[in-house]
Image 1 (cartoon, one colour):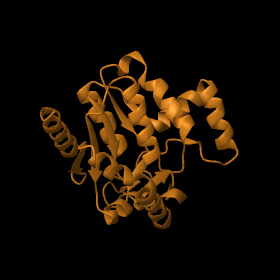
Image 2 (cartoon, rainbow, N blue to C red):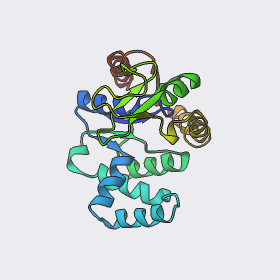
Image 3 (cartoon, rainbow, N blue to C red):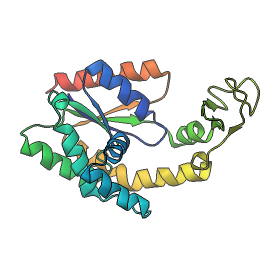
Amino acid sequence: MRIVLVGPPGAGKGTQAVRLAEKLRIPHISTGDLFRANISKQTELGKLAKSYMDAGNLVPDEVTIAMAKDRMEQPDAEGGFLLDGFPRNVSQAEALDALLQEESIKLDAVLDLEVPEDEVVKRIAGRRVCRNESSHVFHVTYSPPKQEGVCDVCGGELYQRDDDSEGTVRKRLEVYHTQTEPIIDYYKAQGLVVTISSLGPVDEITRRALEALKREDATK
């Protein structure tokens, strides 16, 4: 299957992407991984992306698209893939459609992980990270440490990262609503969107997603 995974920050996309890709036996293609791999290997695209990042600028869509195209052309992606973090806006979605059309292939589904905004804020703003190198992660509600502010594993101080503050989370949600959410309507017009709730245990969400994808695949 060829799947695009979408959802707001805090919806659990990273966790579900890895699990779904393993279950479906297709590669998980994450934009974060693409950037890190290209920069680490010092590819031409990696050097170009780094030049923008070092200058404090956003990497242009065409660079992201080129990286995604290169990755989707690798042998392990011939039978399908799961895209996580790409496309991030409608122009990238249109570019992806054009790329796939060149190869005479199509997306099978766009899996939308739905989660209430207040839950997103609760999930992210409640995270606490160990200051030591271990960087163990806890949550004030879902996985609290035995002693408040102290890492269970190494005894290091737990703190809230700046980008996990409620104000920052709400700004990230604004960006998602403005830039990324419109691709859901774009793909709905193509009959590709499958929406599931991202509330509940991780295993249950994975089961829910696989069942929804199976139903979607059966209708094609």
